[in-house]
Length: 551
Image 1 (spheres, rainbow, N blue to C red):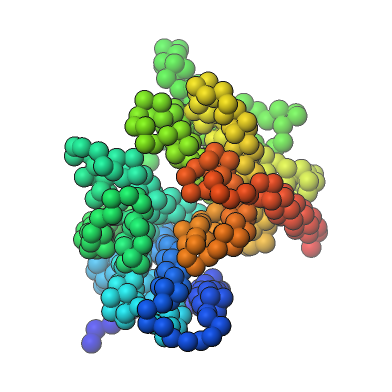
Image 2 (cartoon, rainbow, N blue to C red):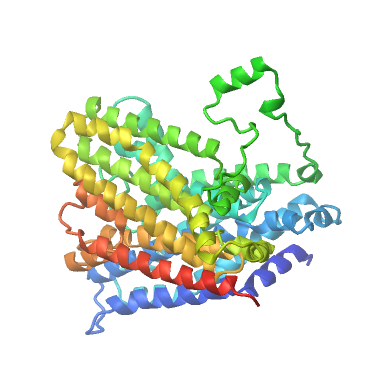
């Protein structure tokens, strides 16, 4: 039997990392805890009881969340690490074919995720022992859908990894694509369901790309649209996800050759060296010209903040302006839909979509900006150079935080036009909009504080970025599982206590989004966020002072 050495190298190498050990141990403990907390006191088996199905749903959603959080990590950094370490050329010059390299890395990463899935088998066996669910129809179907979603996320991560140049950018792009694949694909069906024409049919098939719809179908729960339940969503998902995996694999294989390392780069021309006519045209075309020579650092400017803005590609002002313009256009489009669209949507539903848009941008972009503030300097040796400067620890810390606060603030301000139009149409919403903005500001502050705190405690950017995304998604997305399982098996008080930790849920309750009106999350959520931010600021300050001390 011919063995692929890449599989052994990737699989064993990944298992030796602390991240893999922590993920496997944490997943096993979390799955066991889910079942123990809801295990019946009498320990009696009832084949017709609804309790076993409720616990099985909780287990299924928990396993799906864990796989969506962890499965993209290893594939997204697999190929880009080879490029960064200058070992990809050695692989391409080896006797192995490109498809052997690709599938070796893919299956090696999937092996680590497979061990994580195996850790959930005892919890699934406990659900089966309670009765009420079948081995093939329920447990087998759930594991089939989740394994297919894991393959889908892995192929997506490999495709991103072959195009990315750094590990943090690969993780950022992969998590953004996973968010769009799992959540944003459900949006068109939510608005177009029941409407005539071809667009609702396209939206119906589009949402079948998301594993959420397939899992809800397997768990015999109302689908993600919550209206007009469709049959065989899991079958459609299997068809579309398989086709998507094939397409992504073909793209990755086409890209995985020597040309990936021989890309010609244009030297570019500085705007200041162009003719007067060329400078005038670029002045009209670009609000912020990325090729114009930057001015010197002012005497009152924080040099660390300026250094972060100029050295970080995604943090440059022209990219932030483009993102802000896109956010403003989307918010105005959603407001226009609320005023002239279908009466079934209502301003509350559109407002909820706007809140989710802003929160998704914050949760997606903040770790990519803040997770490497300190860890990247420590990893690259740049922190030693900062220590040799006359700058104090507080100046370094405030400069780095300012380089994250300003872009996030720009994202928040960019969506204000939509709220302004809503207040102009209905002045009674002014108080709601004020409280929504406070919730979103707390969401931004919480994301920055958590990401910076994790960055100060880690020595590698990849680990810091992964942990930052995981922490924020657990708080902002994981707590939503309690809301999905409201009334079965979680009661009102349990759901409200879980949502109190989620600043996004607090904003949804303020705007009276359907399904959140019965919960009172304010001011409890604000107190939690302020406490968490204070704790993170103290940890970051102490850690920065420790790092700046002479060794």
